[in-house]
Length: 256
Image (cartoon, rainbow, N blue to C red; front, side, top):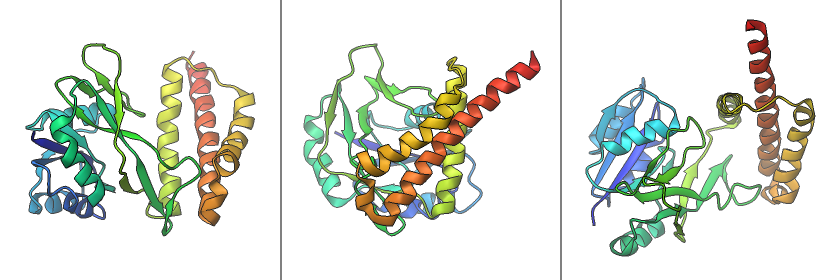
């Protein structure tokens, strides 16, 4: 059965070539670019990907639009900062003819940060739903924490692959801080729109709980000083999320 790899991206010239080199075995690669100003598009085109340009619609809606542009029904969704190692490639190839379109397939992901592969702190196995048949499943339209869902409202069926994706998660600490800032904004907005109330108790406790969870309960300390950086940044992100939720509620009060 043919398979399409689908990538959404913007300004990923540092990552896109590595990603595309790991996908030479699929039947086509579709790249949906949402406004790159670097060499991302040129690199993707030179490497044979089918490049489409369009608006950024949020994670779920953008992935949905990208998937619509694929030629084949089996979809392998890959981020530009990821790559498919040889063992995962071989596993997918060996199982493709027996995959069940009524299932979605989750893949473990191993992330590299600050020069090492991170195995603790909640970062591994970090299962991601990345392989599915678009005749039976599709991305929802969530702005963040997007999911692949059954089209007909049927019970979700999930199977698991054994081998992992490689994820080159952040370029440096500054990149992680920038990402935490962006994601915490999206998370706060989603909480606000769902009617979530602001809580001073959560504002003061959630960051501490998140650090304890990542560094101690999920054994982040076993990743050395990088594990400490990850746990501290996770706590910082939790703080930002609750501060921004309070800001949104305060802004609504000012308008009323």
